[in-house]
Image 1: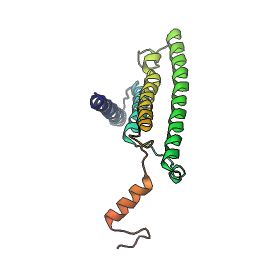
Image 2 (image 1 turned 90 degrees about the vertical axis):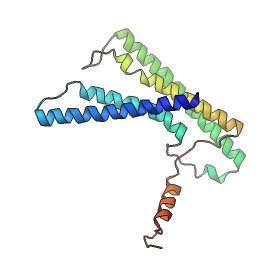
Image 3 (image 1 turned 60 degrees about the vertical axis):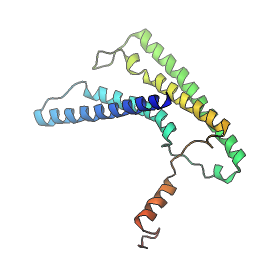
Length: 182
């Protein structure tokens, strides 16, 4: 089931990116090639990018693509690192909770007011519902990570280690740090 959800999430992110790219390409082509524009393209592009970011934040937790600073945490023994990870995840969940309450209130007010997007005949609360949905997805990923840390299956956030990756690429290309070939 988890693999299915991951594939759906990847598919949605890919679809959002492809749609956004195609829409911007068509808008540029129409505007500069035919001197006409698509009046709703900018608003839809902004919405698509917002949706893509909110799906991407959740997905980034899963694949470990977020950049983090864990140099200090690595100095501690494993049990202390585990505690630091649990506290960090709980702080992230607190942030999600605050954002969930705020977005729920915001979307409720948008719905009660009944306003629509400026250029697209869609209620604004529906278009902005990714604020709530994205935080729910992020909270689920964080809860899954918290459970993995508590059970000892994972040490903490899977963070992108740019320094290690750079060193690997430099060694792979056969260059040293000072730029001389080996």
